[in-house]
Image 1 (spheres, each protein chain N blue to C red):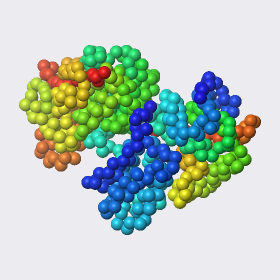
Image 2 (image 1 turned 135 degrees about the vertical axis):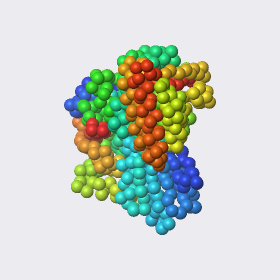
Image 3 (image 1 turned 90 degrees about the horizontal axis):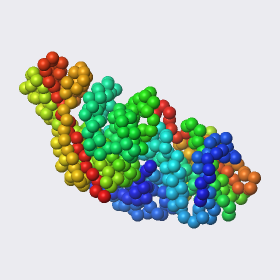
Image 4 (image 1 turned 45 degrees about the vertical axis):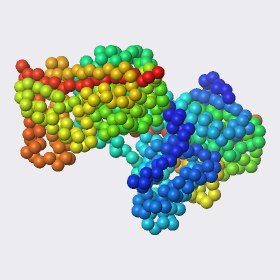
Length: 392
Length: 173
């Protein structure tokens, strides 16, 4: 399951600006002297550093004790001989052995600290990991599925395919995929353990088998190259400050000839009547709010450009509108209510907005709910769907 | 190298998943065999686990340390067998390989350290020792860090058997 190219190659890089020495790949030497070039590069890098020196092993997939002994002893030696130096080791929660292995360094010197890298890649992840948000995520999927069920087939998804759902969140979309399209294999990956726990529980409760829920970083997955016929990534490029990096990974794991399918929003195009003006103002502010947190909730129509620039061919894009006329209008209203809480309360407060702004901001959501529940009203949430084929 | 059919191992009551065997000299002709075998077996047995990627990575790390120990410390000639078994959350790895008395004593000493009250201190001591790691460091790591249960024994044909019981997935995760 681990990408072979990651386990065969071993590299190191040094970023002088960040005083960070990074190790990548697989380190299982027979003898310590096989690492002499790497250790020399580490010594060279640290020679001009005072204060904190960072050692990044987040992408070090494998490491044996020969390598750890050589590297660990060198780090210890550095902090013991250099009074002006401290070392911080950054591990990854995705690579299971790393944190506990490197944590022993902390016990050997108080000048060494070790921490597990976590949500840095996902500025918005902490907002949506709140368990109270799970209900609304499920409702959102329910509302979008009635559109996507047909669209997925039009974008090339067929039964019996090898499918990956990247940034699967609470996994409800993967369950629907499994039931509707019966893929030969379905891997659902996310960077939230809480969401994956929930996903596994739901799949188990519903008796849905065959979904492989895995913990991972969408921007740097451990999955092998060229193994999926169809890769989905929904509403996620927009919560990521570097969407090109995720797309590059989606491209990598997709088989040549396979397709990558993404959905994203352009929140400022949310609409409703009556009270259209207030609604429009609020959603324009939503876009600015997300931008403040390095996320682009306006990315939807940009998906075509992203896919083309990402090397995909036969790029197809379209949009659909989730509305209050899709089934029960209360479902739509519930989604907007949760957005109000998240955007006009949690996120606006974190940005430091004053009460007057928050009140006006919240009113647009209330008006959207009003439009959704009004017997003659109309409320909409537009979503862009795009897919591209990886060249043969 | 050949894979045996499914069934019960003669040495254990756990259902068997994979059985590899090869000549110890062939195995020890190339250091990368440890990495290749551990990676291959981890890929084969990671399916149907709570998190296949995470499991595969941990399993590969643990098995690699066992194989590296055997690579470094083994008898002159004979067959190396690697059997992997599973029941529920318990994964068992059984390595059977040629071992003279001196080789056996190395493992006996290492297992003694793993089972000692101060195993953690012994692990740290070995991890940061001046000399390069010996056969016992990998076993100590498995005992201390992976909470593996390790055992050794003699086979009827004179080879030795190294058994590691691992519970790599926390069901509460």
